View 1: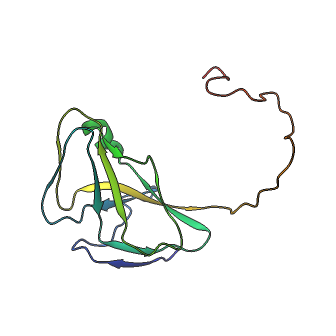
View 2: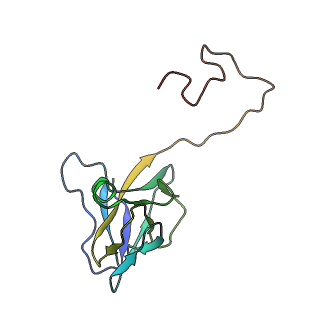
View 3: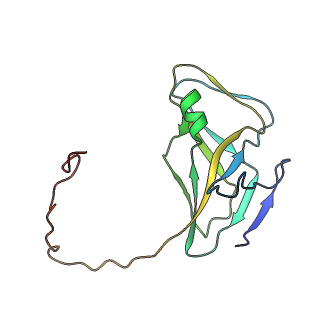
Length: 143
């Protein structure tokens, strides 16, 4: 699938690192290093602008290596980029460790994954059909 992209960063276009990769790494498009102190958040620009086709969403996901080694993840879990958004892709990083972390120009800070979705129309009803599970949740199945 071809997707239009404007690249205002000085880095090459994002690309899959392996044939089986689902995500494409995004790089920090910053002019100087940024210190991310413990429990601090920072909105990291990427310099990328994309046109996501209708019926798809772009997901911004954290990088597992940053989370494991440094406690760096996304403040909003997974970020969603809607198909009608045309602004710069930015990533909300948070430092969940007890040590400061330096974000450097060009660092791989997150991954971009494209997903197809279905739009829904709600049908309001007075009750829902019953199931074996019923209202049980939050550990109800023993997990």
